[in-house]
Image (tube, rainbow, N blue to C red; front, side, top):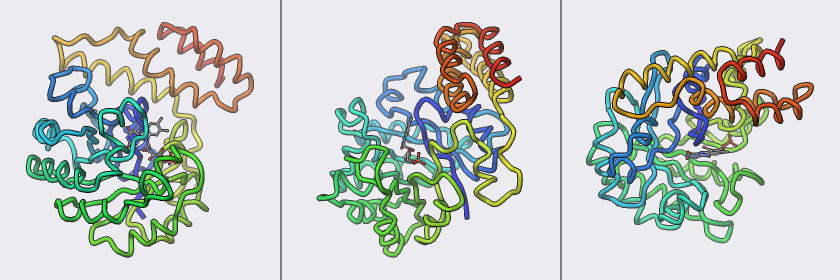
Length: 312
Ligand SMILES: Cc1cc2nc3c(=O)[nH]c(=O)nc-3n(C[C@H](O)[C@H](O)[C@H](O)COP(=O)(O)O)c2cc1C
């Protein structure tokens, strides 16, 4: 079974993807990249498409609602850097759905067909769709979405087996996932609350070709090797390595984009490491005090001090 890292906005940047690759992930996804942002020439959007050495195969995920934006963005995604180009049709956040993108698309299979076709026609990369079962349990659109993806020439279908109305909680509908697998002519990746060997086995029983892991990989990038049955994998706390990769990545960005504003080491580390440190510190002795301290860190030295007091 293949295990892949889910796209997680704010988390799955190049340093974290590299940790997950070292932790056994077979493939990872970028954070969602705005097709409109690329079309408007936004530098921060472009930086989301950076990869770093040692991070293994990476898929680039786009979100958008216009064929012209997605066609343009598909041409902009460097085909020598990525192994796949994915369309987000599952994100329930208002800032995405109010533009007609993300989970809004799960209501409109015909539009998904047009957007995927625009991507397929503008990239040499295999194009895939990541979506949900439908907007809510009274409206299951996933079979129409699968048809649309196959007709548009998509080479894979990633299903978060929940409805949009569930956001990221509630039951994962493995029965419907199994039905989708039964009908699909293209490989299906299953997603939704896989956290351990038991939940992975339940998802594997649906017949999926691969399993995508999201939140359970946060603070535990070694989970992929664990799920593959590697004894003793995922035990070491990778926080120091994470910080090192983050600084390497910042240096790479500064070299590659000399004319763009790249924050200082202090700024970059405190912003990018912040969300991860909350996860690394969860459940540790004195976690509440650590969280309070974390909220005040502004420099690399303070971050290092925080890590030292948590893990030494
Ligand atoms: C903080 C956060 C950010 C996310 N960002 C994205 C994203 O950029 N693109 C996407 O398709 N899904 C995104 N998702 C959804 C995940 O990829 C995944 O489908 C969901 O978390 C269910 O998997 P899990 O139960 O293993 O976490 C995000 C979820 C979370 C919690």
